[in-house]
Image 1 (tube, rainbow, N blue to C red):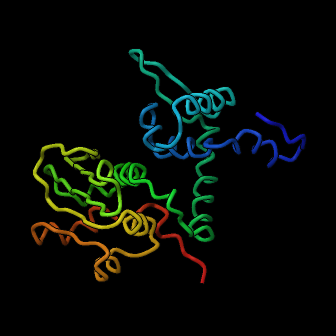
Image 2: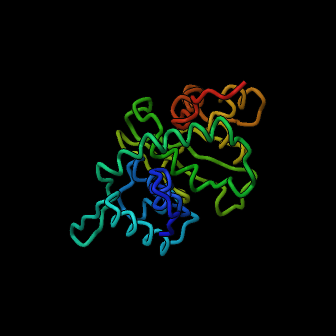
Length: 224
């Protein structure tokens, strides 16, 4: 860790936290990811070597606790790390309010689908297996189709056809769905404008926006 050479508590905190990817690793841990591969899915552009390095640094600093069971490592936040929850939430809300511009490099279908998978309001879904397919018309074929499967209280996301009957299909552009997920535009606006189409049996298609919802920070009040 590089040092600022200041006694200021902000400076001391940032000596640990302002290394690239560190706060995003903390974000994933706060979101419930505990295993290495899940942490990678939440940060798909982060190399495995760098993720390992950041986890070791956070562990040494007392922010993360690593445990091993049956040869598999798990990572959880210590009370010290959990206290960063308010910091991450405040940063996210600030980003929604003041850093609204999205570049093409920000449009990542892997992160979008992973974020959906872990935060969709499962209690609104039918109790039996329900599959919503996604077709992005502006993404390369290998990353342009996804399936979100919810069974009971479990959700999973696949980038290959899982072979189950599809309940409804969402067709749109990746940027549009990210904007809806972030709360930059509403589901009703996207559907009315034709930027999003949902096909399938009418009752199910009408319920898809409620099934998917929006990200936790979508309700953040924007300026003006």
